[in-house]
Image 1 (cartoon, rainbow, N blue to C red):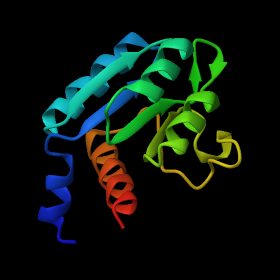
Image 2 (spheres, helix red, strand yellow):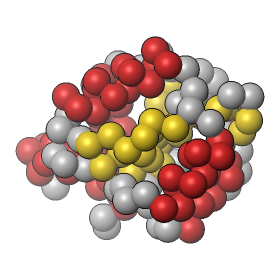
Image 3 (spheres, rainbow, N blue to C red):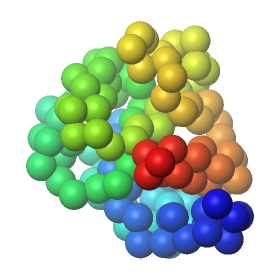
Image 4 (tube, helix red, strand yellow):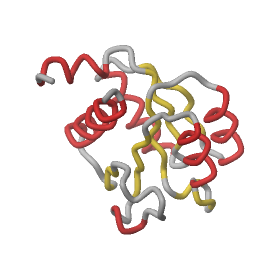
Length: 129
């Protein structure tokens, strides 16, 4: 896939955002809108995120690993059951991700717009293979 084709993967893509930190959530939304994405959510609590993971329409999810003190893994499992890609967002890096999710892409906080874009494109491209 060419770089140009990769960029079009984000055009109109619906992205579920699960982030409990308001400032990071707003930053993520701004970045996603810049990429041409549609933001689903954001969800700031585990129960809301789980409901959205099961019922909303989206192509990829960005999940904060720790949402209001609760691990995000029930949400990740619900999304995995739907065969949708996940990008984890964490301040702890990939080492903080539990099995069986260690193979999923991770953006380490604080992340740049370029890092987020590259990671989302990789997740979407891999899911379409």
